[in-house]
Length: 581
Image (cartoon, rainbow, N blue to C red):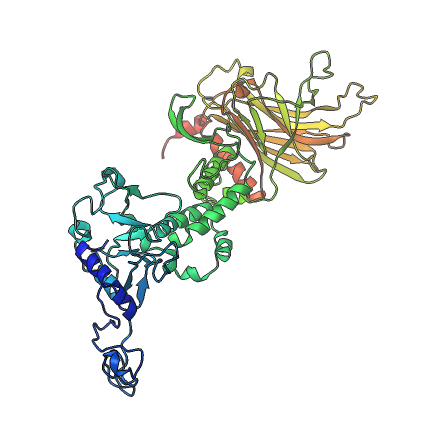
């Protein structure tokens, strides 16, 4: 608000100011960038004798710069700003007899004073606190150290605050804004509220830290050259950015924060059904060696996928956590670390149109019904505490499975070509020293092939319709909490190779087991994986399967496998005895 004396003076003369078109603050109708011009302005060049004003030729500028043929150019006028309720009729609900009109020069002179209700971002003015735009007052303290508004601190204007005392504008900049309208603040920080109420009882004035306003004002959307482009076009351009670049764009560029949010939302929605449901949990756990580790996971107990604002305030944050969990669950760490790291591997995986997914479930029948040890029968469920989504099987309750369930792929394996997949089983708290004689207890799961559609024949009269064709057990790792297996099925050669870091002793390395598969046998082959009781009885255990994209990715996996296995083998005696040269 204006000072009480100035506001009373303005209200007493507001009708005269409105009639003459003058500024309500300085009283001039022709103030320009060069200062005041005292020449009289008359609407008619030849007024009546009773009008009371001198004759002014229409060839003479009203700002006093000679006649119309003068070589002196006319001074640029400063634009006038009016409040939203200005010039409203008395029957209008927004009518106010004391609406304000102010020139740009008065607004400039009001810098760091704040007697004019003026938004420092969009420039809108208001006649009082009940006028159209809701103004937030800038302050020199944060919310936790709230000292109150200017009026409650018994200050006449902002210049009495140390932060606003220097009226000289910074080099190449503008003075600090004293107020910002609600709309501009919401547009600059649409997902995080920085405003708060004055600390004084019954004072409802909203405050916002001045540093926040200045930070956002320097990067407001209107000042960016990208403002001339349509938002849909910017979304298409930002769609080429990686997850890290998108997050950096959101945090540093206010002009494109909404664009980054749209891209992150579209990517997060497209990856729905791939990972467990929310909420997002960040905590710590102890591994098999008793060491404390950071742990980020999706709990899987919510009835919806992770989303904003339920799990994170913004979609950019949701997408960031989706990438981190995907990197861990689907075993991308070997691709995204070390020499030649591929930082966009997870992003490309999330943007694939087709991904591996489970489509069938089978269990072993009872002893009376079982024809062979590998006999399986369809399982319809339900299984409380076991959630299957895409290529993941997630345990949300302890002892979720009374009997192991073999999950098969949604499509059969092709009759020709090669299929390569990476299977990972993570069990919190597993690993560490253990006796090697009780291997059966430490089996976490199995991976292999399941054949369906078999018909009994003379050579195999007891052949079940569904059975395991090949199965390889995955045993608890010695050094890690997860077991990883690379599955390479070659339909032409009829072989299944399983590269596994499933160690039955401390000295065994990452091993490859090759099994012949009768591809010509009747029926169809499906890739299958299952969780055994130890893994199925541990909450937050997860089984994941993903298909390898190309030969380069598979070669990098094999190189990682060979590198990982070397430190598990004792050096040869000759090499150990040789020592350094």
